[in-house]
Amino acid sequence: MTTNKRASDFVVGLTVLLVVVVLIASTLWLKQADLGGRTKHITVRSRDVGGVALGNPVVIRGVRAGRVEQIALGDNDWVVLRLGFDREIELPNDPVVLLTASSLFGEWQATVTSRDGVPPDKVLKAAIEEARTSGDTLAGAVLPDIAQLTAVAGRISGDVAQVAERVQVAFDDAAARELRESIRNFARLSSELARTVNAQSKNLDKISANVQTGLVTINDAATRLNTFSGRIDSATSRGELQTIVNNSQNAARELVQAAQNLKALTDRLDRTESNLASAVARADSVFAKANSRDGTMGLMINDPGLYRQSDSLVRELRSLVADMKKNPKRYINVRVF
Amino acid sequence: MITQISAIGRTTRTIVEPIGSGARFVRDVFLAARDVRSWVPEFSTHARILGVESLPIGIFIALFTGIVLALLASYSVGDIVPPYFVGTLVQKTVTLELAPVLTGLALAGRVGANIAAELGTMRVTEQIDALETLTFDPMSHLVVPRVVASAAMFPIVVGVAMLVGMVSGWAASLLLLDISTPQFLKGVRIFFTSFDVRYGLVKSASFGAAVALIGCRAGLTTQGGAQGVGRSATRAVVISAVMILVLDAFWAIVWLTNRTLK
Image 1 (cartoon, rainbow over the protein chains, first blue to last red):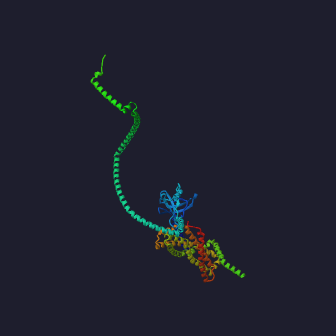
Image 2: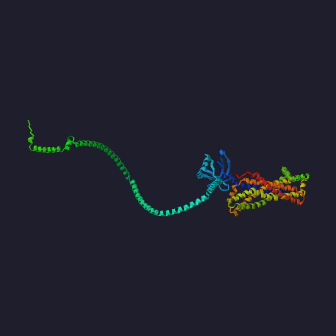
Image 3: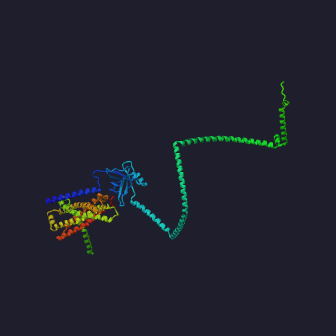
């Protein structure tokens, strides 16, 4: 009896010990408990955690790197999460944490990514910026899960249903008749349009030929322009263009000087013109007086008798001069004393 | 009129009396448990008979339960959910419900009937009367060590059943469902909490205590000869099975109401 009791004690004790050890070890293994202190921890703060729960995976570049170990309410309406990583894992540069649904079945995960990797969403970026701190605490934000998206989709589908209902109300028999008539009109219009297009296609062929010719011309012009630009380029490179520009500047200065001279000449011409006008006016006055047979000049110009007398006088003066040349002593007697 | 009122009173007493006598029995067990020197020497013997020797039954049940659960999970959800949810379903179902309840029901048959038949035989052969004559308290010498051993060893058997159920579910997933080990483990770990194990073990301890108490009371109240022993064993198994389901609902209401995985 004693031997049996001792054996029973041993068997029961061994069984209990084995089962307890195996159960505890299995539980720790399934919980992925940190027994060797190989885990490093980071703290994240966010306004909300969505559906994230204890034990949810922490993912870096799509690879599971740790788990969510603690979720607690913080100050000023923040939620503080503690994430556990293997000590050898390196976090991305400027890390932030996005809390996202990882599947349609209620699984969530914490994705550690660089700040540049945050999706381009204004609300999300604002949430990240709001959660940033100067310390070791990382900023976190929740991406909308499928439930929120389906809620939005539900609202949209409701709106679409309303629109469809309104369309159904508006689309009565009269509208259908009008639509049929419109379709017939459209068919006629399209046949006419086809004829027009057919007719215009020939013109378009001609136009396209002309355009092609024009393009060839433009191509030639472009070639020449290219040659010209090449020359300009070469001239530029040799400095001739600078010389041309300098000469142009000199010519422009000389032109300015010539314009100034021309202006002075014009001024003088103006004064000469006014003098000439004055002289002409006076000459006109003299001619008028001469023509009016008043005075000596007028009489001389307009009186034939006076002309004849004058002519006779001239002839007599010629005969007198001839006589004086022939017989000077008759007219000139020079005496001394 | 008086006869009718008396009939109502008899019916009420018939319904309430077992509850009262059961409560008194439980009270007596607690009082007898204070006599540690009487029941501790008997503990290991009963722990071996009720617990260690029940391990094969628990392992056998859990082995096939795990296989069936994996196949059922795959069949039920098909391609609707990712395959690793088979692991989740196996882990949650085995640890929270099937390992404690199925093992408890199996042990109710084995342990409950064993205790009831053993004590019933002692009763009808007047061995218990002899103990009482020799001033040995049958509660502290016969009942308490069985109740304590049963309450202590049920969680051990159920713990082994949990492990075996998980392993057999994993093997079935790997061999029959083409679910890889990492996928199965991912499903197991994704919603695993230590509460699942604690809940199953505490529940199974209550099952063990209830089965032993019911078996002991059925045995001690045995009347008649061999037929009486048989009736006591049957009654012990039936009441134990019912009580296991009642306690299962009780613990679910107490611990799982308004509790989420988060």
